[in-house]
Image (cartoon, rainbow, N blue to C red; front, top):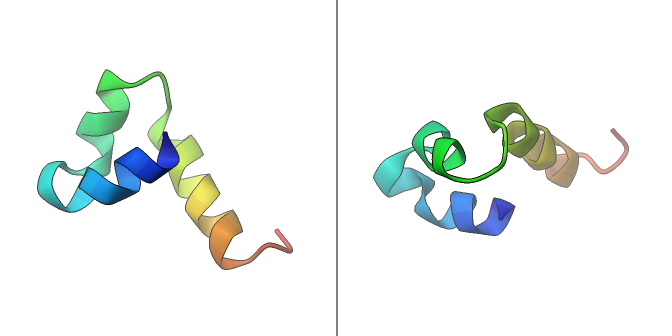
Length: 40
């Protein structure tokens, strides 16, 4: 799901997509931070 949000966030924004999917925006942002710095 995170990949789907990432692929479409430029066109629609992450929050509106998260609202339609069963994922919190904070979960999406946390995943991006962990992807950038795996030590977190």
